[in-house]
Image 1 (cartoon, one colour):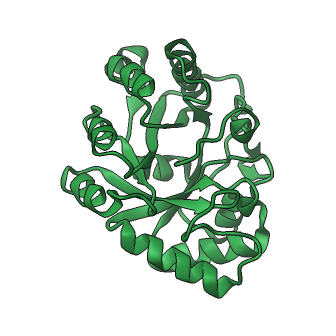
Image 2 (image 1 turned 135 degrees about the horizontal axis):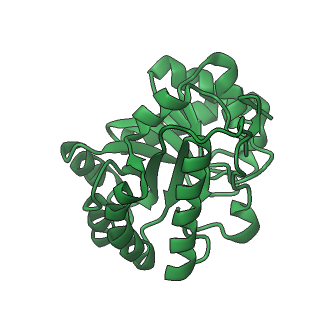
Length: 256
């Protein structure tokens, strides 16, 4: 994201899921790095992270297309990090725009980020609360064989719920790593994701290419296996979750 939401904007974090008291046999984690395409140095550092990191690239950045090609060549999963209101710019979705303009902006954004396997929202606290637009989006993604990650920048989001209704391959974010940009806070959020994965079987993390975030991830990601975590590719996580809502996102697997 060019403008990073903090505090309340990222407040919709997942809570532990309801369980039957049994500890899941497996604990999976997936990691997405947002806001890429702005800086070759930051992009390269995110690309160099060990393991199956997913790289979410903004269309309105100077290096979007080149980095998408580089990431794809390196075998990483590429996502379009789609700007949504309150984000601004030529690609941003806003509630006042007709569906024809939303389609035009989506088409243009996908052209800027080749090899995108899916999309997640950049900002979007207002846009993801729009049922008509989200219904159209998930149908369009299904037609294009793309998946959706709901970044859940607002508790009012309906994006994942609309995806679930039509069976679109989708996920919801559980933990933001770096709303607070200190090594201590980021390490704490990473450990929150580890605990959540052990409790509910999986956790999806989103971070950003801040130097402090990269420092923590470079140091801590190699330690996940020793903590009983299986770090998996995002599409594998989609398959494991089977479009079911986690406890912090809904009840009995249904998004609320």
